[in-house]
Image (cartoon, rainbow, N blue to C red; front, top):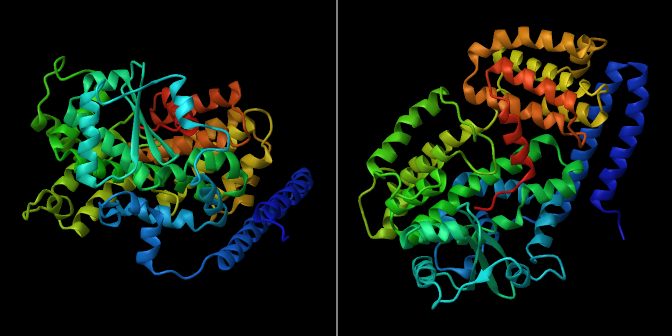
Length: 485
């Protein structure tokens, strides 16, 4: 039997680590750069060879349809998937290692794990007689999207409003609702949430779990591939939102469900106005576009709340959605809709990593300085940390950048970084600044741990950008926890 791709990459990494320890001790910066470049080149060659071996030419239409559970519903899934979701999914699913992982995940849970049994340990399975509102929502989803598999619904005691859809098992789809969500949502709102969860199932979003993939394959993926995983996951939420809106048929209900889940209170406690709610996000749309808004939840496995509201508003005004409601008038064609939404979603991506401007170059140098400072904060720059930093900035002269920093203390590096930030900060939007901090936090945990000294340096760097230190915890939680709602 031929050696697996994982085994080949593991050997390359082992050889790289052994050689890197030698050249780091010698202080030969050009050799460090050459080793890193050589490793990345060899990994790319292995992956490309595997792709040529495994991937057969398939028509684009067949590729798209084969990704989804079209046999499980009458809704034309290719017609309603968000372009960003589809494009990222296609790219990631062509990666040999990720493709193999997804193939295993699509078989369901690991052998011996019974979803129904595990849910019954901590939740109550609902019946139509027990929860008529829930099963009315289920039937509406069946009718609107033509959903065919059996649906089992459970409720668990939880003060937070949330819902989870589990991978299918024994021909049934399992949905868990929290008690708070069940109590506070109307039937229309619950139908939107149920449709959203079924959308995740239909688009096979559970098969491509970034956290599970990184846990098992992280050492064999480049930083760019890791970033794409989370970019895809944020984009996938928009496809699920579209299925939810088609299921409930009411944009007002979708917004109200969003409002209740976001605020944690019912409309009886806060007077809800759809016009006022949408206007709030229309105003914020301009702030987001200009980069002047500060958002605590900018980085997570889900898009920021305003972007979801805006994306759903654009979708409900599009020809794509309105034909499902028997309406001929529309504000956006499908192309215009996707283009507008894509413009907002790009705001969540780093905007300085591939720009050729002089200021972008200064920001990248500052990122290298910040990353190196964090890596050194625990007393030693680990090989994994330097490899990640080099991979994050592939076009830079890493040897020269590292040579400039060699021999300087953490205090000296932080002082130099502060001077650099003073130059670049006026030219960065708040979104660019939070992008910067997210990357630095990611560098800090690349070696598998986060020390108190590293945290202290991270807090100081946050202060340079005027970002509250709590954002560090938010990024860590986002990387460690996969939200399912």
